[in-house]
Structure formats: C-alpha cells, structure tokens
Image (cartoon, rainbow, N blue to C red):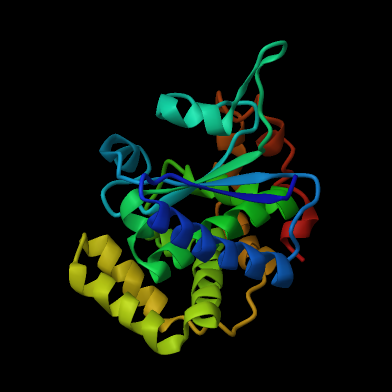
Length: 259
C-alpha cells in the first residue's frame, strides 16, 4: 500500500475523476520532493459536501481541511459513512485501521483546483511532520493547547512553526503545479471573500510568503519551547497528555532546545 492514498466522494464521475487527478498531482509532487515515510500511511478523503458540525469542531466556517493522526484513538464521532472507507470491518478481526492518519477536505475546499491543491499540500505537510518529526509535532501540538493563549508570540495559527511551515509548503506546491499568477488570484479571492477577520489576516500572511525560503522547523520551534517551557511541562502532566507517549516522551528540560 502506498504511503498516500486518495479517496474522492462524488456522484458525478467527471468531477470525481478530475479531483482525483488534481489530488494525485499534489501527492506525486510531495512524494518526489519530500521525505515521505514508508512506515506510516495516510488516507486523503475528499468529501463531496460540507458537514457544518465538522467545520465547527475543527475551528469554524473558515476551516477547509484537517490532518487527523488516528493514534489508536479512532475517529470519535466522525460521520459514519466515512468508516467503511477509513476503517473497514474485517469479519474475523472487526474494525481494522489500515491508515495511520486521515486527511479530510471539505466539499467546498475541492471546488477549485488551487483550493484543493493548497489545502491538501498543507495537510500532507502536517502528516510528514507527524511521521518524520514526532517530537516537534508533539511540542507544537502542546503549544496549541497552552492555557495562556493568545500570548505575545502566539496570537494566530500562522505563528505556530508547524502551521507556518505548512503554509509555505502549500504555496510552494500550488505555484509549482498551477503557476504564480493563478495562485495569487486565488489568494486575493479568498481575501475578498472575507470569511472572517482571522481568515482574511491568514490569507494576507500567505500572500506575503516567499515559498522559496528554507524553513527549519526545529530551529523555529526552539524559541517557543524556551519561552513557554514551564507551561509545557505542566500541560504534559494533565489528563490526556501524561498517558500519551507521544507527548510525555518530550523532554522540555533537555539541552537540545537550547542549542
């Protein structure tokens, strides 16, 4: 089984084929240009419509997709019609989990090629972070959960190193596959849409990104860990984190965060 699998939901064969081809180009670009894991698998599930309560669960109307590491937690209350694809039932074994992560794109996200490309590339970068840089993924996830948010250095999603890197990669992939001018036009259309003040600010941030820059996730994460070390250590001790080896294994007292 490939590390990245594309699944498209649509009753229109032409739409289904086109979206699968577009998503396949993104997947191929990622596989050719980045370190794709051989030990983990991601299913990219492209929905045919928007499920409003899923959008709300993942941050509101402006949400366009999500990367969900299964990590033995299952899918909780995700739509049941997704389970047959994501977690098929084996007659002998019961529910099986052939994938380690699910990338979910809302139907409206897939309506334009560039929108699909940018969101899928963004979420695939989160999959690579999870697969290849687990401690950095865990540290950033804990930073997202700090009770003191927003802080002076963490006011928007794009302030988090994993989110900033995902935005850079998304723009890089989109420009490579569709060209700079069409991507600029898409970004401007998202700004003009004015979905929310935060979303407009995020798209303006993306507009200003130079996708050719080299972004070092480890080096960019270190200053946040140093500034918020005590809060991060306290958060590790809370229920839901202290029992989780991905989070409890991160040693925030280690000198590696200071080098």
